Image (cartoon, rainbow, N blue to C red; front, top):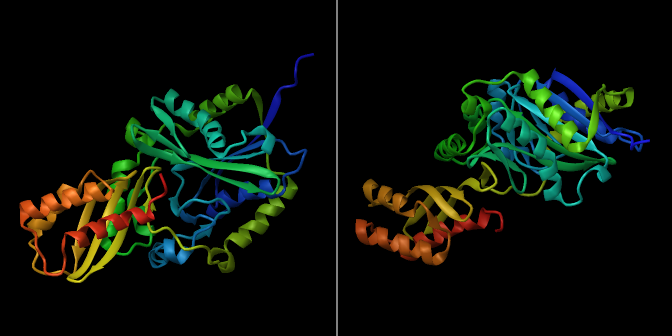
Length: 364
């Protein structure tokens, strides 16, 4: 007798109300027991919404006034990560597995989880690859991120296929400190995010994508995929969580202070910092790639600095490593070449303001 083939239960929910697209995998996790099969849920929300990570404070992350104006509900999930705009153009792929079915380390879990997604993209003609710790990239652009959590007795991994993405709305739903910052977030999303529609010129057939993906899962995991449905216990838990996730106490609970940088993908962050120099406020709206200053907009309430000199300084700083020596050399060169001079704002003030950007970046 050969070894019995592993079985994975598939729950293809199609399109559901937005809150259920989050509560379904939580419900399976909370109802999970020793006899529950490893489960994959495929689901999309019927209508758009905004979802914040478990550790975030909604008021600090989301422009609630904008969301109310356009009728976007806001929910909190029990998986970490950042605030994100979601709609039917993403196909969510949710794994609810026994811990022993997955690798031990977090990075290995993510790599294991994304491999069938990556293979599916490649079979569709998209050269995707895993970008540790939890992103999927195509030629340096992000086409998907992943999240993980322990829910009940289950290990949960979540991500999506990105058919299309409304980058403009994503920039609008985030709470930012200025319109300049919002413009920078949108520009960075345009530059560093991509979708199947952008890469292929059209959105592929959803049924075909699902079929390819499930075939890859079956081959990679050596498993038979059997279509099923949520059982009574899971459905009852989903209904309880639907109510919880829409309650103000849950949505607006307080968490730790947010990291002020907006993550575009694993390496790219956008942030706005203020630095008070004797001669006035220096405000920098910066996009970073790793420890490089990719681009920066400079503003503030300082006086007597020609706009052309500020633009030249912005250009000089583009591509500079965020280390004191590199920044000092770049600013010195710009001051020398442009004659940029402002009473009360010296070389040391510019350098200190720029290096402040490093404080909000993840450690190397």
